[in-house]
Length: 579
Ligand SMILES: Nc1ncnc2c1ncn2[C@@H]1O[C@H](COP(=O)(O)OP(=O)(O)OP(=O)(O)O)[C@@H](O)[C@H]1O
Ligand SMILES: [Mg+2]
Image (tube, rainbow, N blue to C red; front, side, top):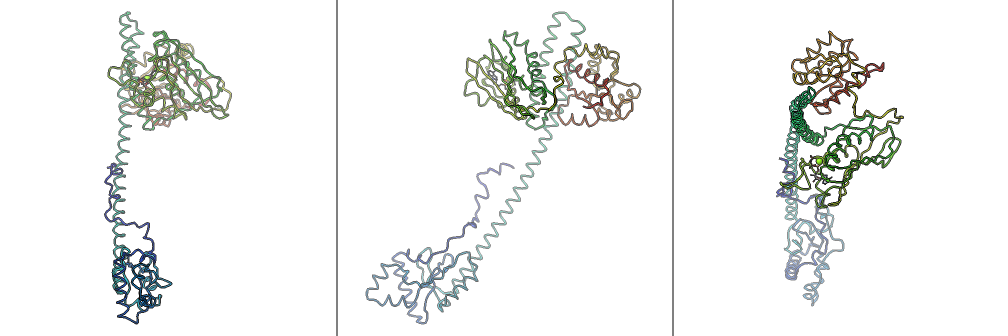
């Protein structure tokens, strides 16, 4: 449908009723007769003379262009006859301009002038002859002598045809516009429907894939904790690594789809740049050590009150840094954060990842930041990957008000960079944003052991994984298989925290949260959504229903403990709970 837009056989371009309505023909000047061919001129003189001889009462003849019925001038009988009487008239009339026949004030009327006005102008010319006859020229050629009535008929016909053509043209245009509008509406509706279907598909897929992944990774974790032989530990390693790899690929695909569907909403929470880069280093230190690569951080001095989306920033740096490790065999990888500009309200930061790796040929660089592109697209390529890391980083940088790029020399190394604008909160930073929670579990055991939490999930494996993990930290765990059971339990016990799945049979997580929130004993209980739904609007719906925070499945055990610790600690403080 939409291809009509660029159709080379466009109906408008190919319009059979084409009329140049914009520019009416220029008025014909009196000198049209100058251009008459000699043969015409000869015939004209003879015929004009004949006419005047037959009608001695006719003083002058208007000159009319028969192609459009326009009067272009007058021929004066006296002037004509006196010139004709001269003995050398032939030379004069055959060799000279016909304009000498013209009246001093020829009647010239623009083509756009209405018919009645033209008749009026003819009458005003004072020539009685206008009623009888005139010289007719067509396409600047003399045609003969005509009669006023004939010419007026021609003019009327020209006007009628033009008006009709204009009407046809207008109807045709209206029809084309109507059809185009209908086609565009259909195309837009189809695109909207496809977009909605895509989002729903992504949400479902992510839920469907992440939920079993949670089971796989969680179970592997539990098996390891229960004690295994070295051989089993090695196999668990493989399960975990493969699981995490698969999860990373799924996350990338979901991420790029979400970004393209403009579904990514950035967080705006306190952020510590050293914390972000340090996280990346921690995550990659093992991979770097395995390849004997040095991993260095160089961080400018930044204001301490920055806010932004730490997770997305970390993801953007991590994409660059993991590439650097992948494509470098020896040397150093440097993660750098530079403060380009600082104002009281914001900071422009530049992040660089510099490696001493294989480098990239100049001709490959322009396409690298596109989805699924790799420098080596051949089937025999040496390095794995889906080709999504760079495009995600660039899009994230753009979302954060920055841009991304690379400088590279083959055989020497590459420097990938991106910029991002971070807001300032305008307050003295009391402490850095929470970094990795190495000791969350120990903290919980130390400070909150014996408190009771509720885990609500319809998936038995998930319930069991969460229960065993949480119980290890000294907390008491109740579990419920759906929202209805959670409400029942909440009526019987007061909980220090509730972990709530969203999609469940009978009563779902949102409804259960709303009902539990209304119980006086749970008006301030931290309720943490625990879900595989990844879209920002899901998060918004959770907060609206009265939840306090959001844990995305599958989650690392450390993250679960960090989340629990954060809310258990806040519950102890007298401050009102806010998300
Ligand atoms: N530091 C680097 N040194 C050399 N080439 C690089 C570097 N970083 C990226 N590239 C090139 O850019 C390509 C695209 O990188 P990108 O991160 O988008 O995808 P990928 O690493 O192949 O896959 P993944 O989606 O798993 O990240 C890489 O395949 C590689 O050819
Ligand atoms: Mg990559």
